Length: 237
Image (cartoon, rainbow, N blue to C red; front, side, top):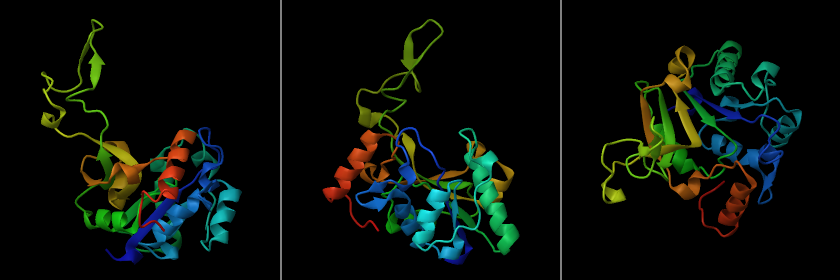
């Protein structure tokens, strides 16, 4: 895919309850946001990278790293209830209206997934075509609805979430996947006409769990520091 036809959107709202100031908090000496900017730069030029933020402080960190910030996110898209759909559509429409560029794919990168690499992004992009709604990164689910996930029935008893009979061995159960929050490659037409939750044509890109860490709590943060300091992950920017 032509890098000039990609729009990379990095979403970084100010404020965080689990990890205060996490988007610009230094992870092993480097502000978290910069990991995603480096990842974006590995697949697209700066003029196709959009930082969507409501925080002047976050925007300043990006500017000091050489990335221009053409707009500040509107207040109505900066609340706890604002949807990813609305934030992405705003960025897509801004780019289309102000720059008139062709956009074949919107790549969403969230700063809370710092361990994606250029190889991950390149391989995920290779899976994308305009017949799908989205290519999304996943890792194998820690719990499997065919094996060890249960729901409570009307009588208060637990029953297997999927399937009638629990397999004897986990390996016999169909694999289950969970999104890891790292990479979303979205069809612009689908984004304009649907919501992410109603996408039906999803193609998975599998990532190792070590690279799939999503920073939501300080426990996650400490684990990320250990993984990076102990060089248990490779080829980061």
